[in-house]
Amino acid sequence: MLQQYPKVEPESARVRFVGFGSSSLDLEVFAYVLDARYEAFLEIQEDLPLRIMDIVEASDTAVPAQTTYIARDAGLDATKSQ
Image (cartoon, rainbow, N blue to C red; front, side, top):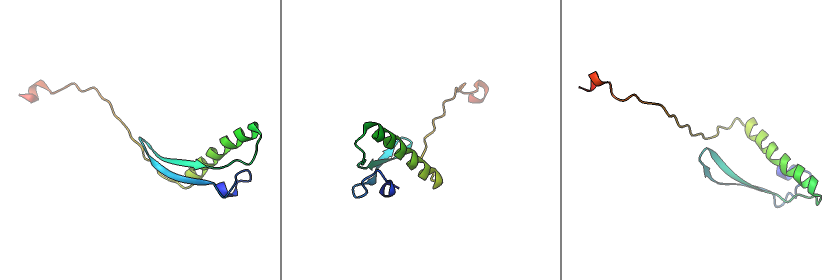
């Protein structure tokens, strides 16, 4: 997608896996934007991650997750503990 994006310089565009988060696979996305106008840059900076999210969703990829359950425990039943 980065290499085909009209406002990205394709030769230097890259995506690299850089590590594991507590509930994520962390990627580094690097691309030179070929528009010097700040407003255009901001639009592209927003559009690229949204397109990446669409690609991940379309791939039906499972994302690692961590769930913590907190419950109140009444302790041991007095009659059963004897």
